[in-house]
Image 1 (cartoon, rainbow, N blue to C red):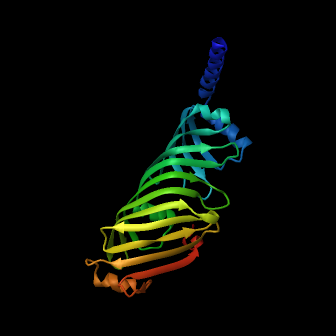
Image 2: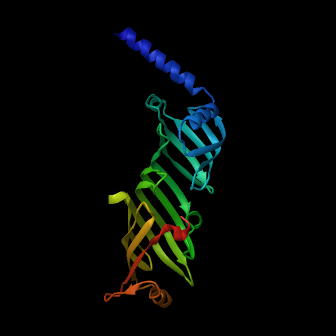
Image 3: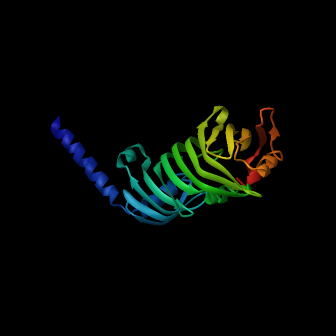
Length: 256
């Protein structure tokens, strides 16, 4: 029994070692020719176990530069590619675990990134004046879909948040908790602390990219008169001094 076990371990070790030394470019080319892989890689180098690409492009997403991976060989027995991936988008570093199934579906987990607010505004094409601060992103799970929005579960912290229209408004630290909802929706709860405006509300997006926002905005004592007057332009004042913002629309309005 032990002899058979050692023989099997030896054969698997040999296969993994052999596969691991195959140039990554050959493996990627084979996968692209035989699956509906939604990622296009350019300038592939290194081996299957530890390699990279100069650029990676997913349709509808910004290009990723200096992609590097470290593959977990055990998942190859399940016809899947799985491993740690490092890359950068517009010089903002991102790290996480990626899994590509036999059908080409992409799933990710433990994604961590630190992206400046101006870059986030550029990526999302948000027409909201000028944003300031830094987004710290911690995503537990993320699943891409060609027919709808990505399914995501995680947190985003917008640190030292600022928005400048006619004047700069300090929003403090904003926390967004994002999770899947019913009927293929993404739901985000929004709260902040230490800002000139107190934020408390939620937003949701469905697979048709229709969104709705319900946000209560309360001016703090250090909010300027101009800021208070500006709130009247897009939110309804409540009897307790807060302002209620309700909006519905489609993300296509923002080019998303």
